Image 1 (cartoon, helix red, strand yellow):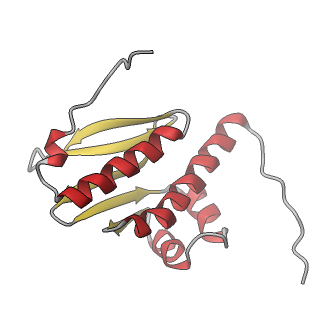
Image 2 (cartoon, rainbow, N blue to C red; image 1 turned 180 degrees about the vertical axis):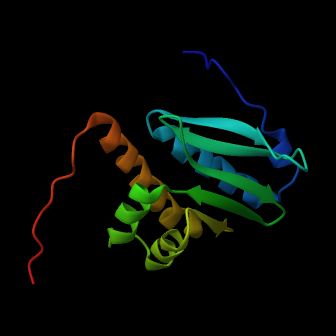
Image 3 (tube, rainbow, N blue to C red; image 1 turned 60 degrees about the vertical axis):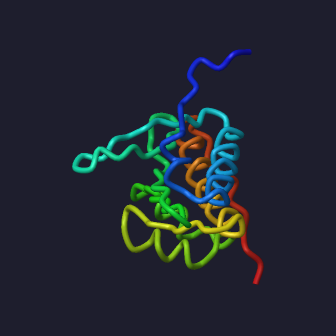
Length: 145
């Protein structure tokens, strides 16, 4: 099946080192595996720099700035998603702490090792939006002490 829309990402490839380009491609392929996630290109107001942004159900998950030797991913979370993410003990405590502080979190990705915890965070928001859309609440199990 042919792709309806293929985005030219040469603007990202031109700004980053080869290993960061590989990391960006890995991030992009992981996002493609999530059903319903779309990538759009935003242009910053002052610099007119193109930045890829990933959406699910028309809600912004995160956008990325790729320059040199790192990718800066800005994760967005509304109040409901923030509460759920902060309470999720399976996520990295550093990421939960960043999300708890404000509605957006800047996360630096330099290696594929950094990508795992970030993708867990994105999947938590993805599942939250999915459950809101379908109206199905997650199963609550009692915690044994």
